[in-house]
Length: 466
Ligand SMILES: [Zn+2]
Image 1 (cartoon, rainbow, N blue to C red):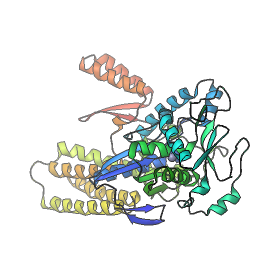
Image 2: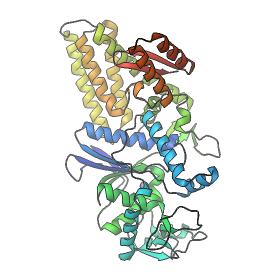
Image 3: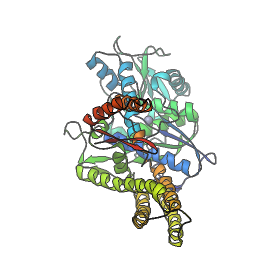
Image 4: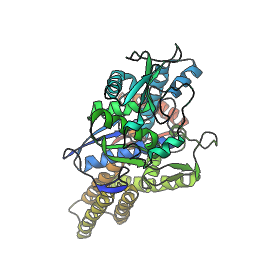
């Protein structure tokens, strides 16, 4: 597989540190709000990378953090009159719901800053001991100039950066380029932990260095995140990690492109700021996922109603194909496949090779989706003409082989449904089992009022949202 490595600005052959094993660290959300469509892109893209790596036979260890200590969380807590941990716990739960709706699998580890303070303190101590960091009034800063390779990821010259850097009010750093590893507590009500430098909390960048080391080791295969994190976040992570460990931090750096809204930059002030939770009111999570994978991850992607409708229709074609094949597996002709079907199966192999070829080319999900549609077209023609059960089954297997990698066609019943609705669906199942059909019908009507239709399929109850 070839991966575009931001560090070298080249597509490179991917060679893992340990054959058959891949370590991936993705910068996760700051949990003070629902995540927006721009945040969703790295979650979906790198979840697909993980699934593809697994499909190709690798064992993947996937870590994505939660930034649960941050000014934004502290401010939100003050606004709402609750504690910072209450804010972050709430939005971690909301993250899981929305991520599940997008078929984003949970990471192997979702480390939280608040649970890694000791690791972070030790990391900062090492940097101080080695002379890369210094304490000033309870803050600890990284001496950026001591890392000569600073700027290697974002391809910036340290002197140019110096001229643009400023020392903010309240900061006591020696050089404007230096950045905080540890921040002293300013007020008594601020969340803080004990440290060799007094009560305080970690700066933002240090958490990823410390948590990546703890869960994946000093050097990892792939570090990924949104393009906006390249500088300063990832640049600072590299500086901290490589100075602390004396080893390369990540061999490959992957960054996804921006999302624009109706061709404009997304911003709260323009009012074109969409959370996934809001979009889920109008579109199925899989439609959002399909949309996010319909372009190459490094290119910018434009979010608009027209494109979402297009994604919905395209995904609908794939869904129909799946449903037709499931139907044909029961209603199709008995007996061996026809020779024409055998030939079509051979064509599936061609699509598989194409699927792998384009995914191997820096995770080109856009072209991978095209390969899936070639299969859909062939399968649909066969379905129209009537096909054997065996052909339907083989077609479905191939379709799902691709769909599983892309995280599509995973069945609406698996989606993160409102727990209340799920409870009703379960209760209806129980009522049916107990032959209490009056209650079952009552629940069905109740769900209908909420815009939920239930379809009983051989695979279980399908929950269809209007
Ligand atoms: Zn990070």
